[in-house]
Every structure is written in C-alpha cells, then in structure tokens.
Amino acid sequence: MFFDKDKYIQYANKLLNSNLISRVDFLEIRFQEDQSEYIIFKNLNPEYIDNSIEKGFSIRVLYRGNWGFASSSVISENEVQKVFLKAMSIVENLEEGKVSLTEEEVYTDEYIQDVAINPFDVPLNEKINFIKDIQNEILKSKNIDFSDFMFLAHREKKLYMNSSGSRIYQERTRIDPSFSMYKLKPELTVLKSNTHPTAKGFEYIKNMNFRNEILKYNEQINEKSKAKSVIPQKYNLLIDPSNLWLTIHETIGHSTEMDRVLLYEANYAGSSFASIDQIGDLIYGSEKVNIVADRSQKDGLSTVMYDDEGVKTYEFDIIKNGVLTGLQSNREIAILAGEKKSKACSYADSYSSFPLQRMPNISLLPNKDKDLKLKDMLSLCEDGIYIVGDSSWSIDMQRYNFQFTGNLFYEVSGGEIKGMLKDVIYQSNTQDFWKNCIEVGGESTYSLEGAFNCGKGQPSQVAAVSHGAPLALFKDINIKNTQNEN
Ligand SMILES: [Zn+2]
Image 1 (cartoon, protein in one colour):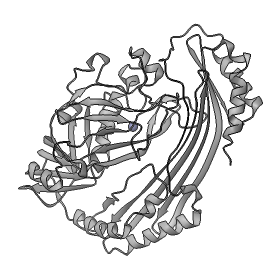
Image 2: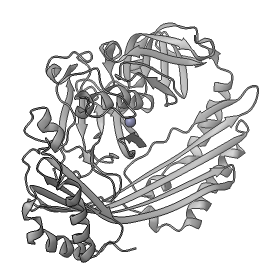
Image 3: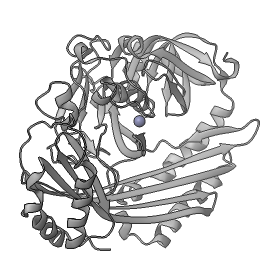
Image 4: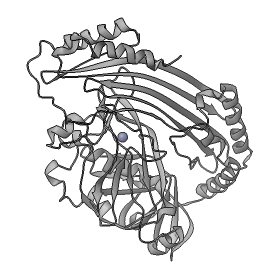
C-alpha cells in the first residue's frame, strides 16, 4: 500500500478552499496509515502471526461548540467531501455546545523518525529464523524448560491539516521484543527478559547481545527457583527503572491527565486524587522527585514532533522538587482548566479514532549533582530489597492506594546483594510512596522503559508510552508476601 500524501493534500485543499466549510468554526482532516505486526513463538514454533495494515482518513469539525466526527477507509476527492458532510450532519441540529480550543500556532512541517531498518522491510522468514535462533539458544540452557517470545512492531504515517492552515506529515516506528522463560521444578518459576519497547527499527533487536543475556537468565532463573520467601514488614526498597516505570505510569502518568482530574474522563484508569487548584501546592513526593513530560524525547514511544491537533510537542514539568507543577492536556481540555496553551497530548490510534488526550513520555529525572551508581545506591539502601523488572499490579480508581510486584527481588544487607527473595509485593499510596523517595541514582543508571498498550476511552484506544527513571531508593515501604496475603 502506498501513502500518496501529495494526492491527499490536494483532496484536503479542495475541501479547505471550498465554500462548504464556510459555516464551521474549525476543521481538521487526518490521513493515517497504521501497520502492525505481532509474532508469538512457543518454544521453537511460531504460534501466532498477524500482520495488518489499515489506512483511511477522518474529519473533525467544530460547529457551534460541538464536535462532529466521521471517517472512511476510502480515500478520494469525492469521499473527502462526503465524510465532511457526514461530520456536519452530526452537529448541525445540536443545541449549542461548550467545546472551545486554545489558540495555537500554524505549522507546515515534516517529521520522519530516523530508523536504520524498517521492521516491515524485513521479510517474515528472516524474522522467524531470527526468533527461532534466540529460542534455540534459550532452550539450550539447562535451567529453562519452556520459553515464549513475543515480537511487536508498529509503523504509523499521519498527514494532518486544519482550517487554520497547518499541514504536517509525520512517520514513526516502534518495536517491542520480549520473552518469558519457565523452569518447572521444584516448582514453576517464571522469569521475564530484561528487554523493553523502544521507538527504533529492527536494528534494535539485531544489535542486542542475546547470547550474553541468555547466560545471565539461565543463572537467574535457577537462583529465583531457590529464593527465600520474603518476611512481610517494612523495608527500604531500591527500585530499578525496569520496575519503576510502571509505578510512574500508574501513580503519576494517569493521575496527572487533566481530563481525569476534571472528571471528564474516567474509563479504565479512573479519575485522580489530584485537583486543578492543587497545581503549585500539592506535595506529591520528596524534593528528590522531579518528573517531566516530554513527547520530544529521543527513542520515546509517544515521541512525535506534533500531536494530533497540530500542536508542537515540548518538555514540561509535572513535578518539580516534589511539588505538582503541571498536568497533561490537549487544546480542548486546557481551555476547561483555564490554561492558554495545550500541552500537545492529543493522539488517535487509527484513522477512524477520535483524538483523545493521551499520555506523553513521563519520566523521573536522574540525580544531576552526583552520578550515583548501583554500588552507591546499594550502600545507601543498607538493608532492604532491590527490585528489578515489572510484573502484576493494582491501583484504586483515584490512582492512590496501590500494590506492585516485580520480576526479581534481591535481599540487600550491609549495602550488598545477598541473594534472591520471592513472593514480594510492595504496597503504599501515591503520596506516601513518593514522599519516601530519599535518593535517586545518576544519569548512568537511567533507562527509558515503557509499553505499547496503555488503554483509554470508549470505544477503547491504545497508545504506546515510555517512562524513564534512574535507580531510586525509597525508605520504609510496606512489603507483603504474595503467598499469605489476606
Ligand atoms: Zn495506562
């Protein structure tokens, strides 16, 4: 399939320059193509392969304070006019609504994310053989009885134009290789690979040193299968970015979405304990906690140069020295909160999806004064638990009381790793947890992790998002044991 953007620009211009749109207050048209691939391997066999591509366009009109929205998978000059009339027919007879938008700049620009190997240019056979080789290597390990491998890739192309005169074309790619390994005796032990999704091409997986990693996994799963069950009590926790990213996503990412704060959106992730009047006052964490939102961050899964309302993305503070300083917004939500500019957080997951306010890359900043490394952080932890990798979690609908588990848990004693623990859950509430963050590691401990599949809205949409963090140390966090949890 070919994304014929010059032709689409002509179709859109024909509509934008016609009398048809003279009655609308604002109009945007978005042509979009999404290609995705999903490969699952169980041991040496491909169990599921899906490669899909969808392409089409949508038109959103703002008319007397209401949105009208329609889309089509057929792209032609005629269809553009038809879809416009359909969007208008939805709002024409409605009572006056309340939607208004922030004033934003007009742009003509193009952003094509730099990718060395487009994953969709790599033949399926080559990918299958590549994964099979890795699986073969994993299954050679004497401690691993079973392994599954998941490979996801996504590439999106978007042409956005609006009645203010913006015309923006963007292309981006992301990839997510991960695998889980199982040891069946003496009891089932599961180990997840220490991999994470990123906005890169196939070169990302090609350049990984799987052989070395697999040797490490072989040792780790053996040690994990013999780990001591944790004694529930309060511990100092040293948390690796591979675990902390998810806690950031759930306790900071979702609770600082302005639409949730305004109770405008509560699907899936609920609302938020925070309120608009607390911006600038709410003590969210200790002064070590500095959180930024950034859709322009290199390799970030939500990184793009312009959002789906044509607003240029930029870095902004969410939490500065522990205090809540900003929320995520789009053009419509920012106005509701009395702000003059959008934070460029609009995103639609397909041509036929209505753009929603979605999460930018939200990250905990590393220590800028001292480059504290794992060794330094362990010694500051003294006695406690070092947690690596994510696993299951739960949080209440106000994004407040939560519990998270992990992939690996190490006992820390006298500032050194003493062996592995198991059955660990950490439990706290958002403010107590972040207030107990007593130190963050240096730049060299920072890692950008994330996920492809944050869900929001009805009908539901998925979005990929990254969260970066350094190692971080929390004091006196409640630990429960998964085996005797009441
Ligand atoms: Zn989410």
